[in-house]
Length: 119
Image 1 (cartoon, rainbow, N blue to C red):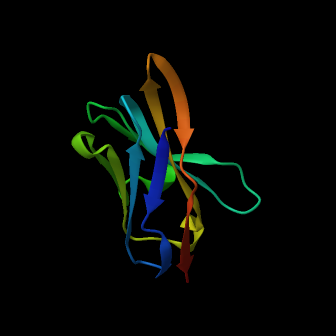
Image 2 (cartoon, rainbow, N blue to C red):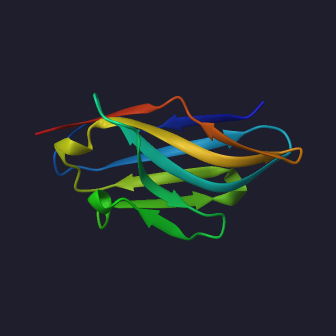
């Protein structure tokens, strides 16, 4: 059974920083793209940042220059370093991964972690 488990959310003042982590676990898994999405109340889930297995990254315009996505393939872990946080970054952040298990490719999601930025 594949699981994605996030950690690192919390409450921070505007201008502060947080680091999110997400670990993928399961037997005989091969992980392709990983990334982070977020969903604020009343809004659709949106892509924040993505990273390929080879390390190529992409970001939402709203977080460019403030957030950095990285991964450790040996640990099946993806990170999101969030700096210069703004109140509009407040949302539930979800880890996402495209994982191959026994030849079947599927999209997996974590349970979400709350990030709240106070003004």
